[in-house]
Amino acid sequence: MTSAEDFDRWYADRVSSPVADDLVQRLLGLPPDLQSTSLLSGQGLDEVVALLALSPGEVLLDLACGRGGYGREIAQRTGCDLVGVDFSPVAIDQALSQGGDFRVGTLTATGLDPATADAVLIVDAFQFASPKLSCLRECLRVLRPGGRLAITTWEALDPEDPRLPLRMRQVDLTRQLPEAGFVDVEVTHKPDWWAIEDRFWRESLTVEAGDDLAVQSMQEEARRVLEGFTGRRRVLATATKGSPPG
Image 1: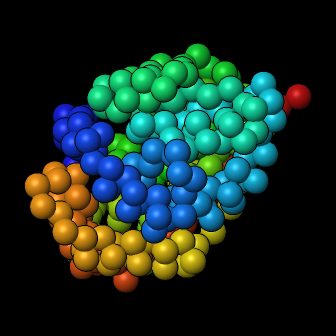
Image 2: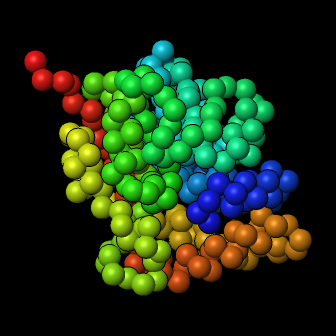
Image 3: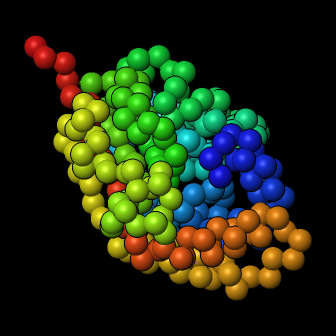
């Protein structure tokens, strides 16, 4: 899936599939009310919350927020103000059904004013940005000086590995974040997150899908992902917007 229309259909199928939601929450160890459409585990979420270090009244932009589950959970834990942006109108409608500030926008054009966010979070969606540097520069634009960026994604062990989609082979945050203008860049490999996802994909294939379109889609993705899963590494990247000179 690459287009907003693709994701619209995917989100529409997901809303009527408690089986898929239960599977994700149980295997990823997520809070029971968190509506996830990504693969960040509960353990990973705890790490992201600690690194963003948000305070009440600060603004978090959850970019490519999907149904808004991760950003809403962080806001509940920290008291920060949440803005969610996604290019799928269906996902935004589902997020808005629970209240909050959710808007249609893209990874490279959020629609936010400059210097309005204290932190930006991109969970498992950076690989869809095109071009990658435009996404990072948009994050830099909307951040206040000293603001924090956190990205969870995957990188290819070998950028020439044909088992992996080109969009993933183009992710190189160690190089791309400084090139976009960020400072204090740290890109950490997370083998424990990788192991949780490996188990998730394998166990998802043991579920009886029946006529559940969301579970069918999940299993199709599992088969595709597992073909090249050993060729990818799980990463958590953090960076800061520096203060202006003088």
